[in-house]
Image (cartoon, rainbow, N blue to C red; front, side, top):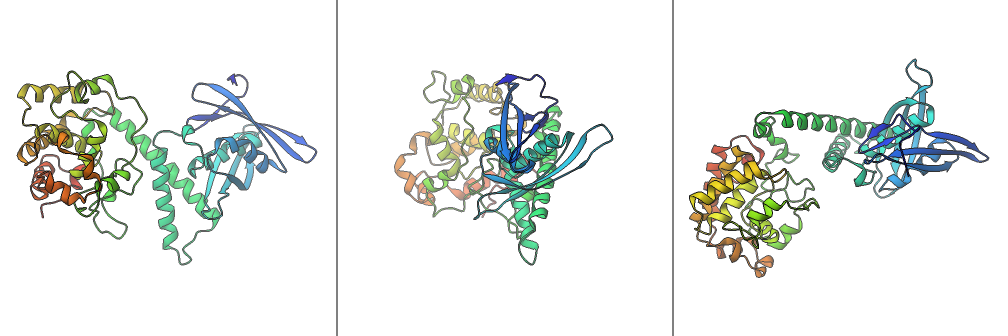
Length: 405
């Protein structure tokens, strides 16, 4: 490993950069050396040999990929008028015969080998081949959405399949546009004077409808945390089964201020403070997802069920969670309407101290039975949800709340 020296300029792909590639002829083919710069600025030289440029680059980039692949085709043409600029188009293919996947990548760079290497890495990123650590945080969502779109297009064709070149090109196009759109929305949100308003900029029905147009009453088979929600139409399912489908939380340390107020072992823990495992159970029992608005309702309901929250404690918590908590734990002040309604709902149900009433024996019971045991009336819960929809119209969390029966 070495600091960036003479391998630049670097073309950024995901969280890494690809520098100027050196290609040297060998008796039986070609050897390439690909400089790869990591997020710390350190550069590693990846070498690979093959019968031609495509095979050599595939061999060199193999260490970056989580999925074995081959370069199916490589085409290089003259680029802009500047000396030695080349345009490369690469099509990569997974080596899994049971689940073939194709992705294309384009790049312009100085030199044929460099253009080919950058295009190959872009194809690997678009196709979901790269190791997760090399990709931005939102890459998993982009990959999942891209896969759904490509499969949907394939399902519209008479042969129910796309030619490899077409599938690869569509995957590249979709992934690029999703990344472009997501980056733009992140910038809009970061510069918005009212971040909560960003949540109502688009038609949430796209995330609430099945492909055939039928409305979703739950979505627990998604890997996207923001889409996940269990709903209330799951009386026959067990708490354990639904919990197993909850997306894993990011492996980050919980900030001290969050632990100060919400940890059940904290000396300043507020009424209803609970461990994370039980907190996740409450999400499922109340039929709520993982968005800020859902979180606000769940916390409010848990605190309200204690029947002990004072006006001062309510004021302290509202200000702490909306102003003092760091992202992603902060909840916009506008969303605290859900907290207030949850607080009232928790105090109005039969259950007392919900965070203590939940026991492990409930994990394998039907959820309908568990709600009845806890005296959580799903009908009354839906009435509170209707009030929440009226207070926070247009948000994804509101639109997917179960309506009164």
